[in-house]
Length: 486
Image (tube, rainbow, N blue to C red; front, side, top):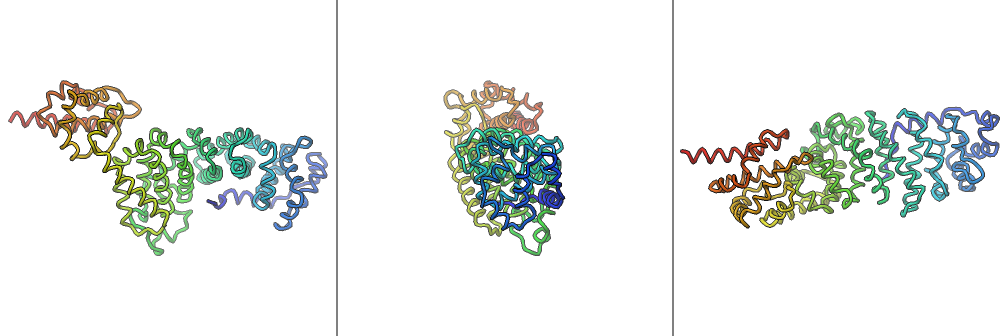
């Protein structure tokens, strides 16, 4: 998927192309050689087709000019102290890679294709300094081609890719939306192979964290013309006629930045088996993406959201599906189906995701599934917990089977702190409330298991959901106690 270059970078590159360079002065200062100057002059300020023919006629010479060899330095190493030349050569290199595929192929097959560029990433700590910015643009393009050309990776890729990711991560962590958009577009260029996606995930605290923060900001508001609430819309509506760069959703997040971030995470989701559980446990990805579906302003963003959810849930049904129900994903999908949507890929993913949710819900609301979850020692919002029919049919079995073994295990789960996953306590209190509601005559047995004392203690918990569910459980106990005294 090809993206237009960020406008900020294009403006910077055009500005640099227009600046005069004292090439002869650089030769006199022995910064570059006469031979270097001749090579540069042959392709400088000439028509694109002429430049292409010149480079294609001597690819090895221009590869050596840019990357050096055992005998000569790269132009970037020899001009390290001339920022004007560095800037110009970085822009020129980007142009050559775009216009002359044969040169790009030669560059990625060079013994050390990334060596001249890596030091330039640290040329300045200022995020807006042009040299690191232009270097990251060139290096992300070069590495993108290198990853495809060498799918089994190389020591050079293994060294360069983490360093480039770290630089891009610093860009994405700024408050400047222009720099953020540069970062996510460079991520997208790199995430073309399984190797690059795995490395991105390995560095997820610095790479993925800032992107998810932006997505959370985006859920802070709802656009009146979202695909969920207003369907595809018409050309006459204001949001459809506005320039996309001016469209903002929650938290002031621009549509272009939102789309590019969603694209990056969609690319990452093709490693669903590797990343799914971590995205759930560390970032609550299912509730977040469900909320984003509510505010999605365009079909193209909705398509990426649905595609990502489908990829992740397909690989992680056991671990991720339970989070989809309390997030109300099935209801969101049902609502989306009532809208007039035109994107065929979107519709295909919507249908597949809806079918997946229906199959899961119908197959998981059983006593066997509930028992297996409780015995695992870790509760999730799987279908049985909020299903009134399930509790009407099975509450007594839960209490009496194997001398109350499930209730004992539930008490054991509730006895733990769960400081890193408070929803476990909320789910446990929810289950106690249903047990008391459906089997009030078993309150004494439930109290002997220690369930009453624990849910009463949890009324003071710091977590709002835990307090609410424990209050509901205690309320059921008090309701039946009061009714019994009448």
